[in-house]
Image 1 (cartoon, helix red, strand yellow):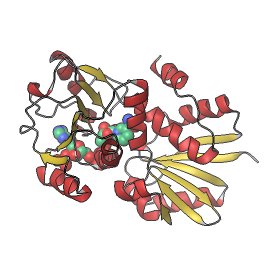
Image 2: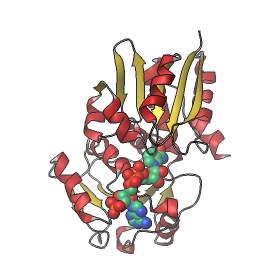
Image 3: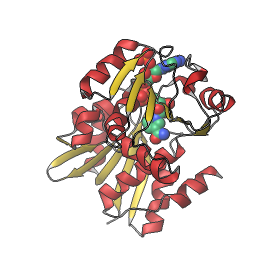
Length: 266
Ligand code: NDP
């Protein structure tokens, strides 16, 4: 019987995940389907339960259900436990296992596709929401010299930094981040609204990579960073890499992401 997978979100029509997983399945010869499911805002758990009851084997979870998925899981991977959010569910006879592949996806895009070494670098992470929280541990594992979280609501950045208890991790406001960084990751939702966080141009040099987790359009953040000499990248590579990590967890085979990223870019 063909195995069923899905992505749950609200909204979900824009999701590229069905296209990505269909490409992975073709490439690796896996007999599976992958659909997009619009779960009601108040009905995520019920929606997942009916998917499992009708043969669902695994699912991705996107906005706004990642924290609910974390609570729903019977078991969590250590990285999902720390992230406080789940984007990948696996269903078996023992129940629901939750994982978080967003951070691994970002690191794979940065170090693999974009060929950036992160050891010894200074990283500025903008935002303190679910996406930011999910990437902190995987970024720290790359041994940067410093990881600074800057957020509009400074107390949220401070809480996040305290949660991880790592001397390299500090928090500040946007305007207090005013020295050079090797990597600046925009994990705020500002780009969704076409807005630019109030950043100092001093954070960018010609060797800085400015990375926006948002994908599919040029953002005020990327344009600002380019104007101040930085190299830029959007989050499409992260999206495909987090999907590849989920696919490998479910199917035990790792797809080649490069042709899938290239085809989405065209
Ligand atoms: P959350 O809603 O959890 O967090 C939002 C964050 O953005 C908060 O830190 C908030 O600050 C900040 N923020 C919101 N609006 C503004 C603004 N106008 N100016 C400055 N800061 C602002 O969102 P997520 O963390 O889930 O997602 C963040 C982004 O990451 C989204 O664009 C999402 O699409 C993207 N993403 C991309 C992925 C990929 O695979 N490429 C994967 C996951 C996420 P405050 O605390 O002050 O409210």
